[in-house]
Length: 169
Image (cartoon, rainbow, N blue to C red):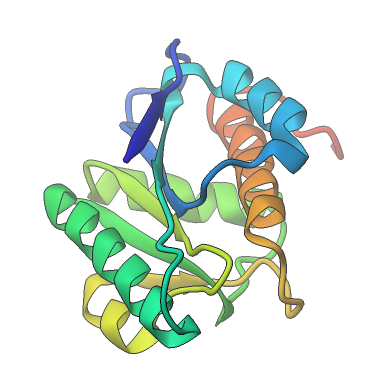
């Protein structure tokens, strides 16, 4: 497991910790923008990369990756777990997401966003470990793009919650 922790702290007191847990070797396709948002988010976000399994049938790989994710989630039993999946619910616009995230951060020590790898995760195994299933869109996205989209939205949301002006107002 490779773990990257980003530095700094500018969220209000109610914001405690955001964690992105994802299965990926790397995100070299989107490395520059992801690194830029990592800098902007500073200590507000911890990213945990789990190395994907590569041998076996697709279902076997998916199950092994899922078991690795669950093992990590068990270390954060007091966290609110958001599973990012095309079959989830959308949260509306960025302001709606900021209201939702603000509420969840008041209720929980941390929020963990889970994005599966190239083969996704086994939803049946994940079911008992998640609190909310979030969809960005009805489209199936490459996991690198999903990571970039989530990090960008977390940046916007934390900016709003930190007192910054929403750019569309």
